[in-house]
Amino acid sequence: MHRLKVLMNMFFIITTCVLTAVALFTNILFPVQSVEPVIFWQILATCFLCAVSTLVYQFERIPYVLTVFLHYLMINAIVLGFGYLFEWYDVQNWKSVIAMVVMIALIYTLVVLCSWKGLVKEAEKMNRKLQDLQKRR
Image (cartoon, rainbow, N blue to C red; front, top):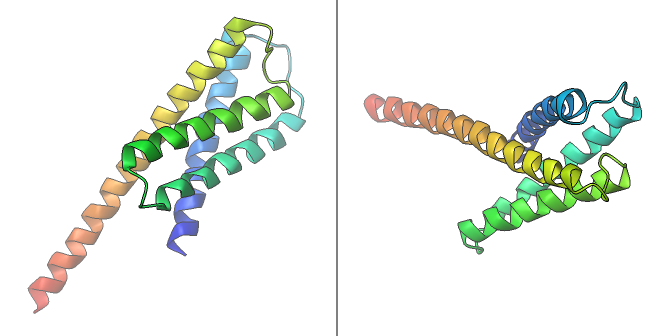
């Protein structure tokens, strides 16, 4: 149950960050008149796969630094792959590709910071509960 909660939380954080990036991308960096409604389903599918990819952190045998690196590569593969498939960016336009890679890095960093903040809060909550249990003894 805890894993599902973490997975859903990651999905919401990722989706919020991606929607913000899409707004920035389509309004400022590479302005377009409108976006196709199907993009919302594409974004949800992509964000879901990105959230599922966080399960890589469950493999404790892999060193943490390597896990973070592998996860970052997975995110790039998912987003760039789906972006190519769904024609979110022009592969022939290097500025578009660079913008996607930079946006992925920024979103990845923001998601990591948000999830880290949530983990710190959860740890503090658990520590308070442990202190309360120790006081009762």
